[in-house]
Image (tube, rainbow, N blue to C red; front, side, top):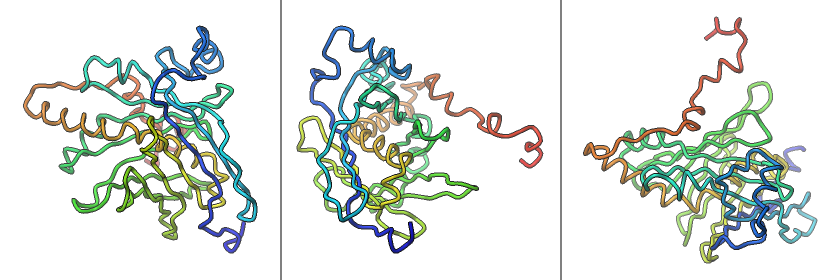
Length: 283
């Protein structure tokens, strides 16, 4: 697609993460439904609690009419790590997205140690997440960044391309917003390529990703990362409140946090897996 054809502005794809107000919904009704989902993907853990549905609509060109949203999947939270945690301060958010057929799409995990380190460094509660998707073996880290006390909330992440190329994105909270609405900007041209619309009037919460770049609308890796980010927004405020309480108690010596094993696994040295022995001489 040429630069002239890649016109930013119209909506090319909408990805809705519609979170339920209760746990009584079609995806879980049935005594054997959880076993059915686990048989389709090992990513559907025994502590999985279905919390919402995914809906999508997409058009290829701006001349086409945007179709209605259709359900394409569902979202789970690992309940033992959140509601079932030993205490509120030990909570860790792990969300997973699945297709309607039960295939795993993406996971977003809270990085607790990073949150506490960056919060201590900045003086403000900072949240941090790791995102894994079926589209890439690369882990994408979405980190909140502190641009000053008067700046709106910002997050940043990057995507790798071929031959070492990469694109950098900033997710910036809108200044006039009743909920958690964001604009997504691309570094290399400053274009606003997406928006996140948080419909907090919905009882459970609906979080729509609106993709305005025709190329990114076709990029499943980008779209799945943004879907995971949008689903996380329901838990952002409780996570920040938890971080502040942990920092306060830890500073007084009243709390001794421990990392869960699966979070520690995300800190493993990736070079052992991705580089040959000969390349270690270049490090």
